[in-house]
Length: 425
Image (cartoon, rainbow, N blue to C red; front, side, top):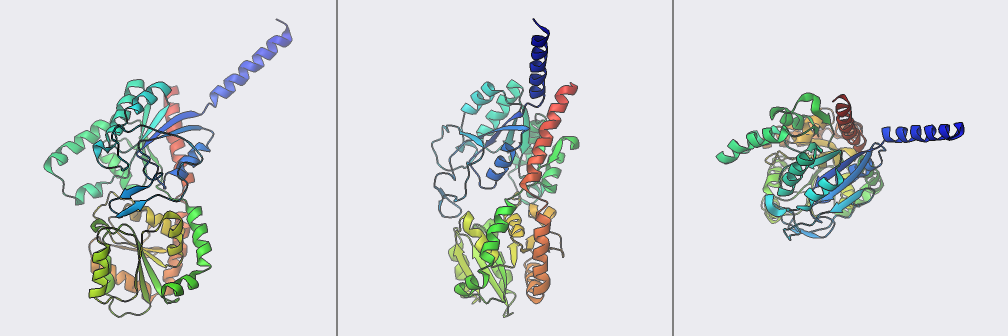
């Protein structure tokens, strides 16, 4: 071997080592079905050179049209759900198009995938389905680190009465599960407290803020805002009114009837309008309540797909979340409304309220179930339109720091900490 050959071989070896040192960490993510709020996160992660991401889906719900029992209508989301990242659909042994209870998703092939691919880590979103547990078992068997992600909060456990056997089993099950989780991904303050309560170590919890596509919603709302007065006039809404917006499924847990009661307590106060976006089994009951109580300026829009939601954000001033029964819910519509520049009125039982709503700054926080307080908050907004709209501007500023960029960064930090731990061991 000549000196030149030796130098060439040494250079090649050094280059190989440099590439190996920067080899991306291979991450699998398991989700029940494509979800409009997670697709942008997957794209953000796929764009990071440190991550080689593959997403596994247990169902085609959302990509294929399906019957949403709570909306009471067929749904197919009109935003791209599968672009910009690698994904695979797993065969579901339960031949159903909708995601439901524990046994609605039975996808044994996740065991084979994790065993064959030997990822550096697998991200598990909750433990609600059998396939989640199959993935957890497979990851433990092959030595794949588990990243755990959920929307859970202690607030939900404290306010919802559960059967005794659930109260007995759940804490023990979670503490068992969390002993096998390498890193926890906290979407916010209440979620972090949930992990800590069930045994997670603080140093293993990483901030992965629950986000929406702020840029998309701000841009679309900006386009519709140019037609704000025209859209309002077409709908029969006074251009100077303070417009309250409700956007959720018309089900009891979303509290549309309670909102209508609070709105009715405002009496004949002028300068107010309420838009109800959404559909569901109690919509007819809500419409009947409006007629029977002769509530003025209430508009029922029905189900609106993702691309059309910014139209209603753009013509509104205040977004309202009156619910809290299903307080495991973060409330991503709060994020959307803030990205569109709306003030917020939200109950203290909504996860997003704790992190995103600054009382008196970008909105008002009311006690869950206190309809008098909710009504007074709405009256205040109508009486102070200038401050109300300044709150909307503040919402936009706050939500700018709560994005998919920060979310992807949190996941990468969790992965890097796993890599650092391996080196130390």
